[in-house]
Length: 230
Image (cartoon, helix red, strand yellow):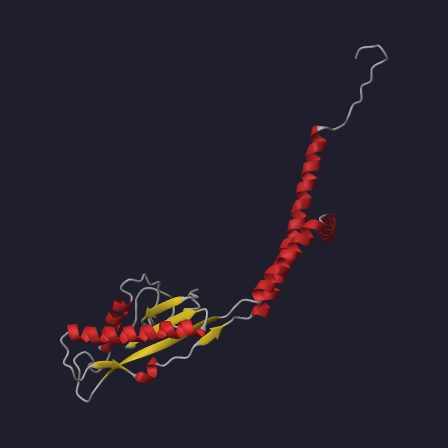
C-alpha cells in the first residue's frame, strides 16, 4: 500500500480519524496531569553497641545472617518478589502504595551474595504524610524485632546489636516521571493507531463491496408484455 492509498483511506474515513485523535488528546492530557508518587528508603546498618564484643557481631560478615533473620521476621506474612538488582526501588517494582523490606543481594542468576549487614526499608504512597507514617512504622517494627530476636537468643543486655542512627534517617522523594515526554509518546502512538484504523476500516469496506459485486455480478431486468406471462 502506497502513501497515496493511505491518504485516500484517511480522507474517506475522517470520522474514524477524528475519534482516534480525540481519544489520543484525552490520553495525552491525562498523562500530563498524572499525580506524583512519593517514596522513601532506609538502609539500616547493624552495628555492635558498647565496647565489648557481642557474639552476634564478630569480626567479618557474621552480622549478615542476623540481618537475614530480621528480614524474614519482617516479611513473615508477605510474599516478597525478588529483583535482579538491589538498586531497584519500590517505584521500579510498580508499587505506588505500600512497603518493601529486603536485603541487598549482589548475587547473579545462579546464586545469592549478601555482602552487607543491611536491611533496606522502603515505603510509597500518594502523599508525603502517608510515606512518613509507613516508614516510621517500619523503623519501629525493625527495632522491636531486633530486640525480640536478641532476647530469644539469650543475648546479654549489654552490649547488644543495634542500628546506626544515621542510617535510619530518610527523605521523602517525589517520583513524577517526565509527563511532557510521556504526552508526546502518547500523541505519536495515538496518531499512528488512528491512521491504521482508517486504513483497516477502508479495507473492510472495500472487501465488503467486492464480495457484493462477486455475489451479484449484474442485474437482469425482466419485463412482461401487457396481459402476458413471463
